[in-house]
Length: 305
Image (cartoon, rainbow, N blue to C red):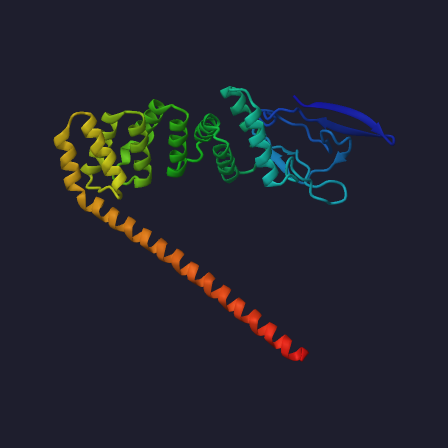
């Protein structure tokens, strides 16, 4: 309920309305007409230009002051804090928190409370900063909080979450997330994400899941882009005692292995050639510099004569 007080100012009765601090102000109420609104924390009377209509009787009520005395626009809370400082503050706070999901989620809720739009960009920077600190558990919590808000549903975010779960020794949870959220679109998933999951299965000895994933990719006619994937699949077949399947995979994708080896040799030769040319260039530069110094010295001696 609104509290209305009558106060005599300069011999006149002035009607004031005190607003409650809850967000349910507009729910099913009829408001009295008033002339002045007391803004919280100001101690001054501000006039409003914005009108909000009541749901019951469409009565216009002035609620939010548009400008302060003097015509200057009032800044929102946190608007004068730089983006870099906000990110640094959140990272520091998350690192100092105890290992509690409620504490982390509460901190993140408070951090975004005054943002007009969901700060997906700054949160990505926060995640990268946590990754540099190897705070994989915090990375998982931040990403899961983002997803719970309906934000960050991209392959890039999924890749970060799967990697963080793997680094946090939660391979089974990574597998469950893959099955529920990602693995249904094997025909269009980027190979980068598939390669990551194959590596997760391989490192954690989840060989049956690795083989199942690779067969699913093969079913859509997708060829692995590099030798490391083929080798891991072949090793998995071998460790499961399926030697024939191992030979089949190596034979089927031998062109990839050969191509990878050729590209590796080619890149190595190009790197050596670049280093060699760079060394020759520095040698020429030194010789030129030495010649210039000699000419300069000779010219100086002749001028002295």
